[in-house]
Image (cartoon, rainbow over all chains, first blue to last red; front, side, top):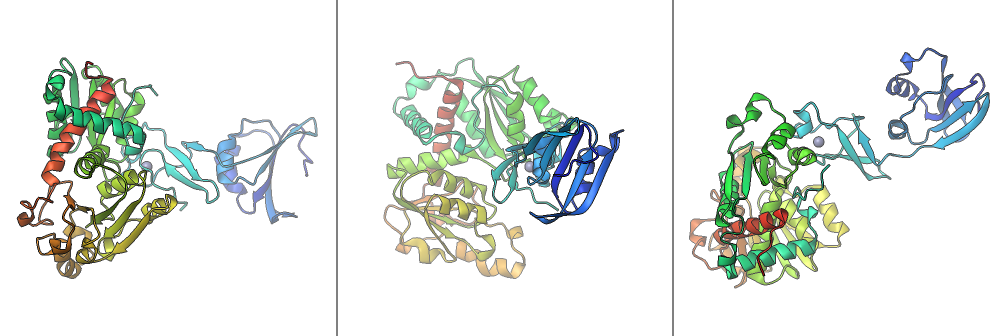
Length: 140
Length: 309
Ligand SMILES: [Zn+2]
């Protein structure tokens, strides 16, 4: 594991190649003042190619969102140049305000204040259903 | 979320709870006098954000018959929703005025939103094409009264099985009983969605799809008819070709069992010929009566009211 260049912060490893910019946006890393390094297409023994994000600052991470985007990511917490903690992610049971229901007949399509909530119904196939109308969430 | 008991989907109730409701519904008929005043001073709010006269009347009749009162609105235009009020705000307001709410809304999941902020029980009286649990309870009571059981039978479902939520919900409810076989009778374009088939498979239920009502008739214990709407067809030609095959008349009943139970959620348009109405196997108006009795039992359950021993 390569934590070089990070003194105290977070290294997100094993990001699916090409997905690092999505994560950069989801985690709002553009708001961070300290150094953020994105490494694209690094070689990986496990996946062939992978992306890595290094953040030289300890920030609050929403592991649910991260797990939803890519549950293969490993989160490495670095303190004083040493690996302090390694977290493996998994798909969260519930997603709140991460994705929106696309069913035009769903109550969430007309009322603004509702928390968009999805429940994991099939972990293997990564299927989430809207907690209100039960519509399956389809990516794109 | 509050700990108020609601009915949003039929699966919110266990099989045992449904049995209890059926028992109370039957007791309401057997010992009617004991229920005449049982809801005195209780108020039911019928919040119908879209019109459904039949469902609303059955709820109101149920409450009135138990000595309670009703208030509410019958379409969104005459409610605050027309001014842009949220479901959540409407529910929180109505909770101050009523002891129980029956709510119908054109958007799917609206009663779940209402249930988040409610302090009184909410009954889903239909949310778009999603759930309509009191129709399913009605169907179960009808079957139980006609057959004396809810297991070991062949259930034919005919018509629009693709968009027919009453059909999906009845399948889901019947799957919880032993040895139910489903015969799904519809044109190819209107077959039940895949997820319903997956659910049947998961429960190990026996099911088959057929296109001809006559072909299926002789093995059925229950025939559940639904309407095929013209606009569901891709073209007029198919509609004209197929529409008569899914209209039930006396000729098609020739091979049917003596004790077949013919059901329909109503309103009927022309999918059951009027000549069938006088056949003793026609149960759809009896079904409407069952709808009142089961709603009476449901209101009592959610209000936590029991007949005095
Ligand atoms: Zn939805």
